[in-house]
Length: 303
Image (cartoon, rainbow, N blue to C red):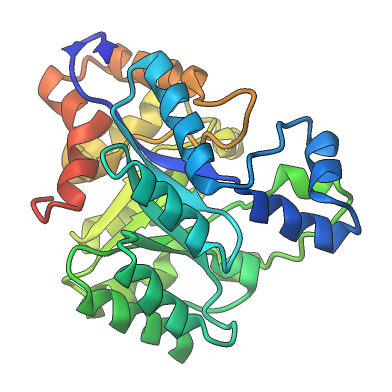
């Protein structure tokens, strides 16, 4: 991709894979069909075949010159969809999957997902209302630690799901489980395992920075509009500057939080983030790290 620092590979660490099963799961909760969910959200209904949706994402990325992206299955139990997407285009995608560790058979799902080549398990403690110190969570982390090159994504901070509001579905999330500090002892215990905190901690920037400072196996992703900044009156370039000054550019992963069609890949987020980095006067070498090389290295064992 052509960037302000030259032409190099850009990789997106955070793209939601809203499969047909995602729409069906929401529809079951709202008493609607998958097509009705898509209409209510104002989105395109995805094809039934996840491989076809993967091709649509690849084409959307091609429009902007994006080399590769991490696709996140966005409802528990949808590992097969993202696995099919990765199998269809292993050159373009890493596979992440959402897991509720409290669900029956959750550990079996992790084992199957890793055997199918998925790269990261995604935990949403506030959404599913559990502590990261729960024995069932630690069992998942044990499994991830045993699987070479696997990563654990942990959503912290403010969590909203816009489509649930459009469908008038409740979101009984519990922010008691949202603080990145909760992950401190866990990240120390699993020192050989890489953890990713998305959205700069989504309102817990200070705590996310503490965690990253104390735990060199913790990475922050930069995805979304980062609207949480309004809580602290921060500018995006300040949000970037703090982790770079504290931990260096090697532990930041560029992401957009792209999610649905017809919008496709969210170039506006890319433009806003590169503009902030440019205003900071960041070097070309650091820009390459943040915008792609760090994510690649995360799964090559060199990060």
